[in-house]
Image (cartoon, rainbow, N blue to C red):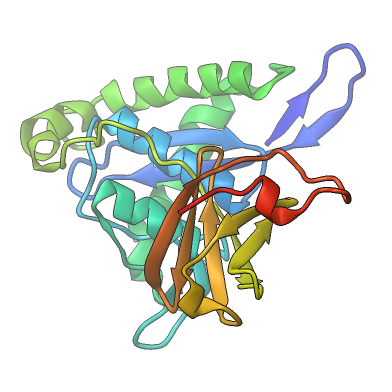
Length: 250
């Protein structure tokens, strides 16, 4: 799918995310800039809010934004996607490689996307994702409200009757994606992040720790064990300053 700019005539490719619930087959579509993990996570979160609840499990395809190492008995889930699932209280079961039945429903949702959404948008031009997604949502809602083939109910009616109450309640806050950095604890018992210093207990001097941070906090872990948390401070040091003069304390 493309964003088509009316003034210049330029086309910018975008990806389209598709999600479906297994019983009612109620479907959610959203155009996103790319398959990067932040866009995948945001689209999954938007799908949960569209459905009004959280399923027990997410079954993603094996794209790297969700699955670091596919296949085998225990595929490795991307850390950020795993943190997202943990925030929403669900588990991740990636579709098995070369097992098309694992994702048959969403493959059908993709076919419906072409037939019931794309076909209704032929010739339309959109200058931004918001306008494009408003149009996609209009046709998504129509699809979910229309009677299903050989059924006397719609996807939405089926969802409200048998599936909605089985979803878990949405958490009070949305997921905040966090960045990671590996650092070595210096001899003065501090680690550096973006030219700011954060203290660590002295017994970890010389050890490698992992910093998990967002716009507000910096959490520090040693071998997966949380050891301290600081308020994030992006004030950089100048070369003339000593670390001990401006530090985030324990």
